[in-house]
Image (cartoon, rainbow, N blue to C red; front, side, top):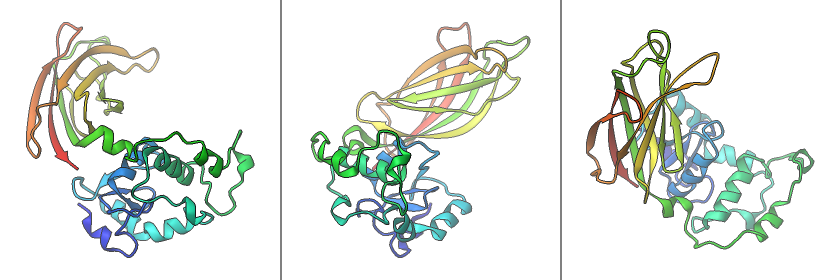
Length: 263
């Protein structure tokens, strides 16, 4: 956990909207609120890697990056030329929040020396803001998600052979619109992934979908089966384990567990 990072000056409120912090963007070196965290996840982990201050395990290097950067220092960079009237508040709607965060960190429109000619078809922020469709005033994260679920992808058992004698299996794991990919385990029909995957828990569509694939260096990866796991009856704070038969293949099972936390 990394709650102590919120005690650093400037880190007690969200770097984007000023709300109470519960999450962090590790690579950006900032602390953010629940609603802004939902938008940051949509930027992709290469742009903003989000961790919970209370639910996730942190590496010391990740903590050190927050200590070295932090909300004050990063906002001096990313909000250098931000007009005060464009700074969002915690009551900002989903569309405005998404536009602001994308403009701040992806196109970097408020940084010193930003060149609008570097973006093809660039439209200034004021125009984009004026043309935003109205929304309810609640963020996308509030509307669509009710918590965070941690999936422990444990192992595969007795998987089908797709190469000459074995397979190189990996999993594509989906929950709602979110997709994650596991590590590949080479030359095994009984892979031990032991991999933890974090998802936002949707308000609806709580079906976890897993597709097992065989990696092929030369041709298209081969299908090794799929399965679905209903997460709708998870009880907060408890871990539930599943052993699921793979479908659309002759054999194979996936063992995993799931743990739900409300936000």
